[in-house]
Length: 570
Image 1 (cartoon, rainbow, N blue to C red):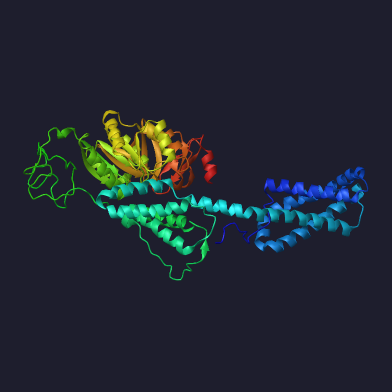
Image 2: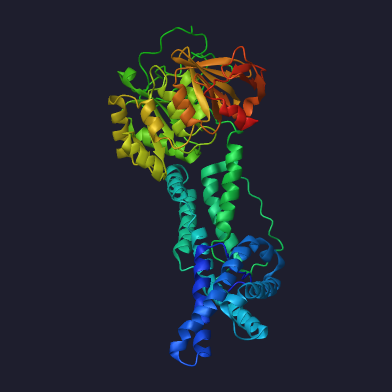
């Protein structure tokens, strides 16, 4: 079996701008000059003066050579290895001749020009040979390190999410769950093996198929796969696990683009049915007695016409005190993960009365559910498309009576550390029912997490600002904001369509969106993309300049202190 520890053919000249290369060149050249001085001197006592003479001539040549070779390294790499070697040799001869002409009278050099040229070419050749041999010796180690780094890209997030998906299928589709575990075993067996030997590409394709089968388990119809390998030489040797990272990037990138376009199956009412049941007054009270067990609000079961969703069916059991049930929203972008949470919540019902309000696939859909339904607890995944869990939580925390939030995550070292520092509750996938029950109990008793704690835990700016109007959350995309202007204790958010008021600090908004907005006044931030230009406006502006807003044509004054902004954009 062929090994990946074999030298590539792409050996090039060293990077002469690298300080390590410069130091090695200095050591090699001076070692060769010392050897030449010893050979030329009659006795060891005369070797030192000879070495000083050679060094006085060689050091200027070396310094000039390194400086010039650093400047023209891209051009040398472009012409190829052997032409660049020839060019370096000719250049060294030219530099040696110029230095000898300039310093020959001072140093009183002995020997002919031919001898000096031979010595320069010999030292140049030995130095390049040293770097060539060193590069070839390190090439296998570098290649192996790159391969190992590539193989290590199988993410812990993938592992834990896959286990969570398998757990969700064990009850409903045990055969499919078994097949997924077999694929995971094959994938990780290859990962943990000694991958220093090349593998046939046919085996790599089969391994990639198993990886995609696991991802299909999680992503479902969002992942579309098409194989075009009819002319592939199945016996061709490649580094092991070379295809998997490429397939992963393509699969997850495509799935992420498709996520926002596909609707989530709502567990709500059938189309055309009244909100409170057929032939019932909208303000009529719900049935006092309800069936035990099926507590989902707006579940997918069909009701006979005239039935109320919560009415007690004939022969059903009775449970009093349903009003204490906590209304829970599940937010996760993976269907198996949502199903897993539903199964676990079903197991928690005896100890913790609850009703599942709805499911959401991203932060935006979670906010939509909270706008239209009463929600007590949100089980919120961190990594979701469009609006992730942390950003959605920051919008939720600004509500007058926000629901409790319990984050769920497969593996996110930064988020976990931030949650622990800021006392934010979270669950690690695969979630255990005991841990979920404990978190639900804490959420019932503990106060809601504060916006300040969530901002401290976040590691990236929001993509939306949340506006709270009449108890509902309206999202304003940061990319659509033209400017932010402080007015009393509020900040006016201006878009091309209208204005919004948010109760946030302009200084904190500037810190969060420093790369997108620029301050033009102590009470105003303008989006960089919204600046159409500057006009002189001595009447309304301290600095005599005003910013022209691209979409609306508004002119905002620039303060004298922020006059440097005008110079920055001119």
